[in-house]
Amino acid sequence: MASNEFQPLQGMSDINAPEIYIWRMIEEKARTIFNSYGYEELRTPVLEKLSVFKRSIGDTTDVVKKEMYAFKPGKHDIAMRPEGTAGTIRHLAGRGEEGLNARVFYIASMFRYERPQAGRKRQFHQIGVEATGEANPLADAECIALQQHLLEEWGLHGSKIQISTRGMPSDRKPVADGLRAALQPHLAELCDDCQRRIDENVLRVIDCKNESCQKIVDQIPTAIEFMSEGSRTYLDQVIQALEIMDIEVEVNPKLVRGLDYYVHTVWEITHGALGAQNAIAGGGRYEIALGKKAVPGVGFAMGMERVITSLEACGITADQFAPKGGVWLVSLGEAALAENMKLARKLRAKGVRCGMELEVKSMKAQMRKANRSGAEKAIIRGEDELAAGTVVVKDMNEGSQEELSLEDVIRDA
Image (cartoon, rainbow, N blue to C red):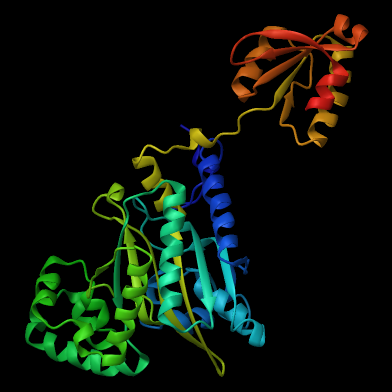
């Protein structure tokens, strides 16, 4: 067993080959699809002022109260980002009018100090998008369609979309008052956390996983019933737009999502491959106040680790995306080694995946390495080939080989 000295911190992981190949596939396909929807990539700092997250995520959320890596090295309280939206909106607000009508995506590490368990790490990776300035139901529907498109492109078919609404900002007080009044007769039956949440953030009672709390929630009116007609109409329009695109959704009034900046549409995508903890992605419409600016937008995020777990459960593994093809240069003698160094440079300049040993070894050892590399062909050179200006090309799959001129090999590479 490796010494703890060489292990990453608890809740964090190294990602190397072959595992890295499925990560690379996910990222490359995401970038291609985001480009087709008109999104540009954005990379924000890992560290932000703590106020950026408090203002957008909310002081009373578990993320801010319990899970952030926050410290004060100087005059500012700073934190490692626990999610991608707040920093993205902070950046876009600083770009003036241009930032208030933008489409950006990010692929980045996030950090939360929580108990590591299956599917949850302290450093995790998210892929997300934010579209600002488009405050209408069609934008929400398109964002959901984009997220489903991504999952299917990765090979995750059969996901289910649950949708709900947080209503307009003006709905928050009547919703909170209505839920508190409905829950009050059952206060003693709620878990300790939910008894506290009734005053701090009553919506969190709705999605509590405690079985006794869920039984009570099933008995009271839903949050949607306390919302304005305008909020319910907005949700209906999102659903209608999705139906036009042949995307099926299920309305789940218990779905509230845990961040305070959401307004109107919220959604969650689940997949059976994950078992009981089956949420794979989520998103929603938001309105974040930064200074004097209220930035409207819609976006989503999905955890790459959970995507990979789902892919593996569906039989899609990293080995399927390992680099294949290319050539392996076999050098029989010092002179051939020197010439193959030059040949490798020429082939790599043409974009050919090319490997070789950098010292003279037996042909058997070099061919074994060529086989492990996944190369399609081995190019073998010894004294005779150097003198004749030729190479022996061996097909690593079929085992056949032929002698070709060096010029032809370089030209046709």
